[in-house]
Structure formats: C-alpha cells, structure tokens
Length: 227
Image: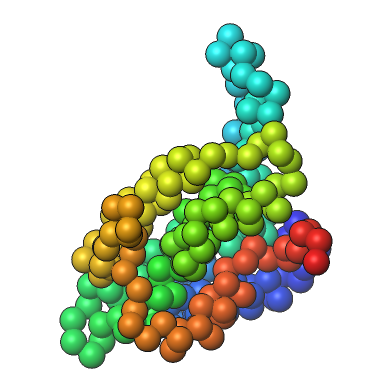
C-alpha cells in the first residue's frame, strides 16, 4: 500500500518513470498529477469489480480449473503505475505525430511500444504477460512460450493449447496495430502467421529494452519462479 512508502519517495518514483517514458519534465508533472487525482476512484472501482462473483448455469458447468478468475488485482502502488501508463499515452501520441526534429525518435518509439505492450498485458493476467513478452517483444517460438508459461503457472490443469496462444497473440497484435498504425511494419512467418518486422540491427536496442523492462515491471514485485 502507499502508506508503506514515504510520499516523497513514491512521487519521485512516479516522476522518474514518467520522465523515462516521455523525456519531458513538464509533461511528466502533468501525467503524475493526473494519475494521482484518479487513483482513489480507480481503487474503489477495482474493489467493486472484485466483489462481483459470476453466477448461473453456464459458469457452474465449467470445470474447476476453468472457473478460476484470472483478472489482476492491483494494490495502490501498482494502480498508480498503471494510471501513469494511461495518462501518458496522449503525450506519447502527440510526440509521435510531431513533425521534423521535434518528432519522436526510434528509441522513444521502442519505449512507447514496450510500455503499451506492458500496459495491455499486465491488466489481464500472467498468461498475457508471458505471451506478449515472449512472442511480441522477443522471438521465442510458441512451443518455447508454452514452456515458459507452464513454469510460471505451475498447474498442469491450466495448460493451454498452441491454438489459444496463436489466437491471443493475434488479439494483442491488433491492439498494438491500432495504437501505432504505420509506425510499425507487419510481416508473415513461414506458416502465414502475422508478426512484427524486426529492425535489421536489433543489438543496438538490447540495453534499452532491458531498461524498459526494469522500469515497467510492477513495483516491488518479487521473482517467485524457482532458479
């Protein structure tokens, strides 16, 4: 909870995250202010959502494993981090649409892309996080991604088949295409599957990607997977 961390440290953390996304101090201040303003309402709305329990014959006929609710529950710190992602998006779009030397650069686009991918996957559940990072950021195969998720979930009854992985990947790609449009290029794999075209010199972004993942990992998240 926010009370466990000093307000000053929390604000600094939020400001540093926003500055990393936007590289603009004035815009970062506006984003953090907007996120803090909406935090209480967002936390109350989440509480009402979690109180709801699905009922009815269709739900009761599902297997026990399929009846698990996989929606993420955020504490106040994580909600603030997510609100920063939401509030920063109009500023990101404005940068991307700017013309000339004031426009967004390649590194800024990488940051915006990974931030948006994080936002879209973390709000769902660990399956989407694993799928998004493995298949849309890194180039793991579907089979390798399945192995990674199975190690994370540690529950054989909740294993999903490869068709589900491919269909959910398509959903994430559509959301990213809607967000970035012509700023990203689409190609096709050997089986006709859509994929994002990679840069010819991917190595120059390795450190930036690592920095992005460090910034965008939910705050105070321990690694629970065995070594």
